[in-house]
Length: 335
Image (cartoon, rainbow, N blue to C red; front, side, top):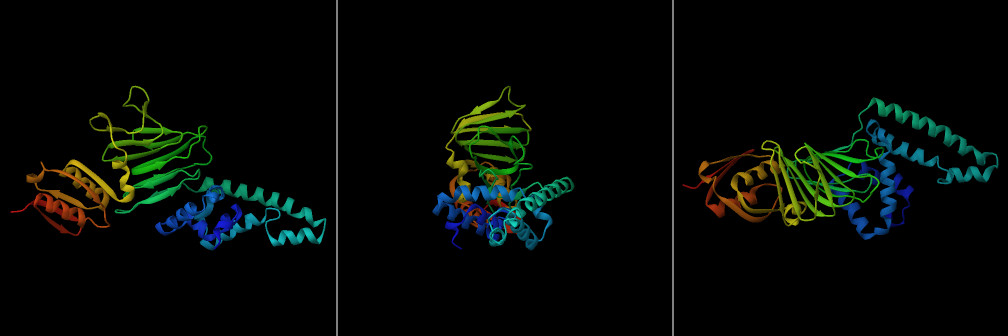
């Protein structure tokens, strides 16, 4: 396909493009991200087509063939976009007006039908990652969300809301498209993160919310703060639900966002914290011998699909015996 020559309508009709919008996977994400890097001048057409496709809320209630055909049919109602409409214009001056009232009539039927289906069905978009996997999610306004392993994001009524709102469970990195008229809000447990256009990382695990700002500005709103807290680049703010304590410090943002490249930085990390990362990222149950609880781990680790490399590094660093059995991992001192 010569996608570099595609118009907005061409993308809208393309089945591979539709699959990427509605059913993204690593292969499709890589293809379209590479395409946009090679042909940045096509970003406007791609993003506008994505917005139009997101408006078709009844996608999940059709078979693949039905969905593709309905999209094609709706676009063909537009004047002058198909060979058939061109022939009609050539045949008769009277028929030249036919598509206008047909398009208007069918448009009303479609809008009415979509309204009824929106009442009858829950069409809230949701993306969820498995253990050991990450995923790029493009929101309708071209905001990029990178989900870490074992995480999920939902964004109901994104196009029709004066605010751009998403709900996060787990961890994600955001590159938010700037729009001062429509603030972007991430809802995480007891905290709201309000931005206009910026990049930042949010993690919510085991009752602890942590925000790291890479660029731009964000405002944190929570009952834990006496007033909204404005962050600056390099800030880390964390809130613990149990202790109700707030932590604020300056950090190197890349060390908290490098997981997008499957890299984790451990700095004087207690083995209990390393075990939590293994449990969260790989879905394993880790048991620690009390004798190793005081150990501190410092390393830059590339996370593979399995935990073997990290476990081997721990074993070699501290002379540990590590026993793995299915989803159980036992870490103890070598005898």
